[in-house]
Length: 191
Length: 132
Image 1 (cartoon, rainbow over the protein chains, first blue to last red):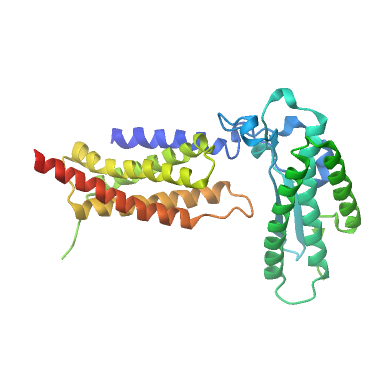
Image 2 (cartoon, rainbow over the protein chains, first blue to last red; image 1 turned 30 degrees about the vertical axis):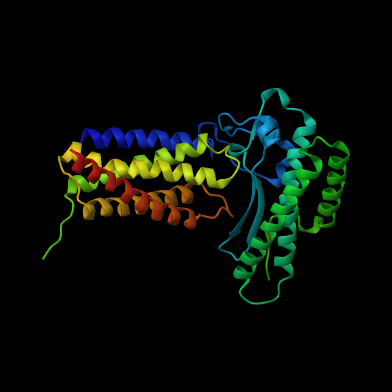
C-alpha cells in the first residue's frame, strides 16, 4: 500500500513539473485575443523555459505560442479567433526584453491573424453544404501554410537580427492585414 | 475455466508503476529535448521505458515474492505499453492546442520495441538462473 501511495504521489509531482513546461499553470495568464495585441508586453510571456535551453543552440531569443480557435455558437454564429498564449510563451533572457524583439514576436501573432482572417473570408463566402467540414479542411490547410510562413519569417529576419528584412516583413504583413480589414471581427454571422 | 493471471493487488501495483513510468518519460522530455534529431529522443525514451517495464519483474519478486514466468511477464509488458499510451493521450487531451496532433505512431513503435527489448531482458534473467 505504501509503495502505491509513494510512487503515485511521486508520479503526480513529476507530471505536474513536466506539464508546467508546456503550460505554466503556476503563473497562468489567459490567452489574449488578437484584438488586444497592443496590450501585450514581454511581461506577458510567463511560460517556463526548459532548463539548459541556450540562446546559441536554438538561435532564438523568445518563443511565442499562438493558435486559432473556432467556436460554433448555439445561435448559429461562428467565432474564429487568433490567440496568443502567455503561459506557453517565454523569453530566454530577462536582459533582452527590447522593443525590437517584442515587435518581431508580435508579428508572429500578426501572421496567425492573417491566416485567421483568410479563413473568416472563406467561411463568409462559402455557399456549399456541410460548412463545418469545409471549415475544418480549410483550417488544416491554413495551419500548414501558416507554419511555413512563420518559419520563413524567422529564417529571413534571423529572429529579428536582420532589420531590413524585419521591416520588409512588417510592411508586407501590415498590408495583408489591411487588405483583409473587413474580416477583422472574430464573430461571423453565417446566413 | 477462469484464467486469473494477476491478483487485484498486483494489478494496482502495475497501474501505479505504469503511471510513475509515464511521469518519468514526460519529465525526460523536459531535459533531453536538445538532441538534434527526433531519433535520439525516441531511442532515449525507448531505453528508459524498456528498463522501467523490465523493473516490473523485480517489483513482483520483491513485493509479492513472485517470479514472473514469461506469459505473465509479457502480459505485464503489454499492459504497461497500453497504459503508457492511454496516459499520454489523456495528457495530450488536457494540454493540447488546436492542431497539436497526438502521435499514435510514436507510442505504437514504443510499444513494439518495449516488447522486444523486454523479452531480451527477460532472457538474461533465465541465463543468470542457469549460471547459478
